[in-house]
Amino acid sequence: MITYEVLSHALIRSAKEAGLKAYNVKSMMNTITCDREFSFLCTPEESDEPYTVRAEIDFHWDSVLTAQTVYGNNRPVFDESSASVPSDELDTDFLVELQIKYSFEADENIDKLNQELNRVFAKYMSHDNIPSIRWQLIVSNKGEQKITSIWAVHYWDINIKKDVEFNQIFREIHSVLMGLKDLSFLK
View 1 (tube, helix red, strand yellow):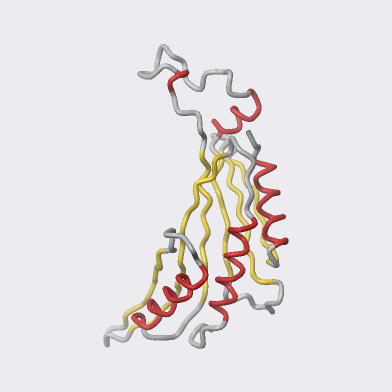
View 2 (view 1 turned 180 degrees about the horizontal axis):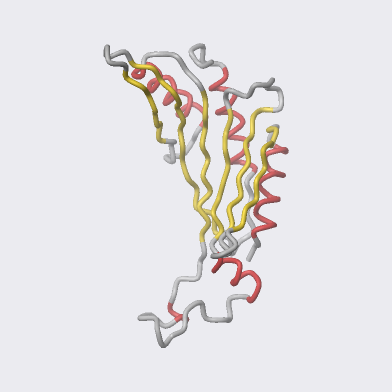
């Protein structure tokens, strides 16, 4: 079973190997629950500041996962007297949800943006886990719309009981970011 530290280092290493520049790396721990959060931003190494097209990578690490990595899988996660399912019958394939969030700025018709973004995702992604596009916009009292932020997000379930390899995911992130940079309507 891999640990929080091994997972976070593997993500950064794979990003760098894929030609991405990792920055704004954060590792946080809730001192009450002992849950942990890891995140970083990345952009293609050839990008110049300010990074208007970027990806945010993050995951949440539950305190139970820390206990499992420290004490092993031989200890029950729950006290059988208080659980409705005996601990040896629980599914112990722990998964961590890896979030990939593409952020960018745009001034364009929303329908055209959706079409172009989906075209880029379809070009560089050979799977069905296509990011969902989300918008935040302001509508004036005259009905004029202004996009204030736009992002696309998708998730991958990572089985931490196995050695994980992220090179393919980060090569895809690099390709998508380069494809997004080439869109004329992105700032």
